[in-house]
Length: 340
Image 1 (cartoon, rainbow, N blue to C red):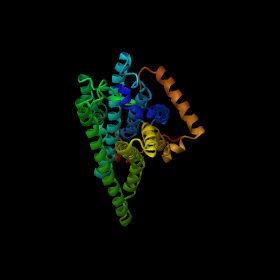
Image 2: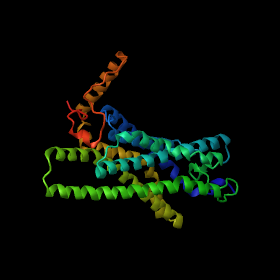
Image 3: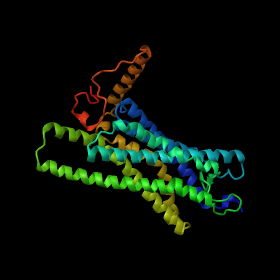
């Protein structure tokens, strides 16, 4: 039996997936450019958006070059390329999920525990980019990266007999499904607890008069952390829709409406990066600075900084810049001043 017949019905997803993945890359590049122009990378909570954008770009970029699964069973070069893409995609999607989880953990700690998290940035960066690397190499040893229908990922089927590969099934469950579903459960619980806590805090604030500095601190904290909570929500919704489409195709994959739904959902799944970019651009403080006049100013400032850095061999640091972006820094008058 020809391997392409095993997943023949899935190849209609390839075109939309490549197109939407490339579109998502363009959106994320725009988000990264905005982050750099507005200098939204000085503090840890700001860099979280940058980390998420980088991981989302990696996932969308790896999807946009995943087009050799059809030729992999009969072409050696295509097979090796497909295995590399499978490894890269596995790392990229795990980086993306870990970045989502870290954002929710940081928001939970900052809001509910009122603890600074900037001192733990190295640990969080390792969780995002280091932890997945400890396990994603295993399918290379067992040759279980390769074509899977219209994608290059885990090889779950023997390319000659179309029989299920037990090793591939075990690895995809252990390396992908269990960790990602566990991450989604943790993110959901932390999001729920954080929302309940914020709602109760608002009620308490209305019932008792707060000191002016604490009130200002709380408002600024919510302003900075609230937008971060939208990113996990986007990921959760996308995963729930994709899981629903997967179940529908498993029970009745030949149904016309199920096929249409699968095209829409599986093609839009790579667009998570684009949705995250839109959510970031819709932030009130970001939206105000995306006007042509403001963008021109930030572009000039960026060019001026680049020219200045070329002339100076040693960078000068202002002593007034705070070292932490924790909730205590909201009391500082030097907090990330960007307005002119």
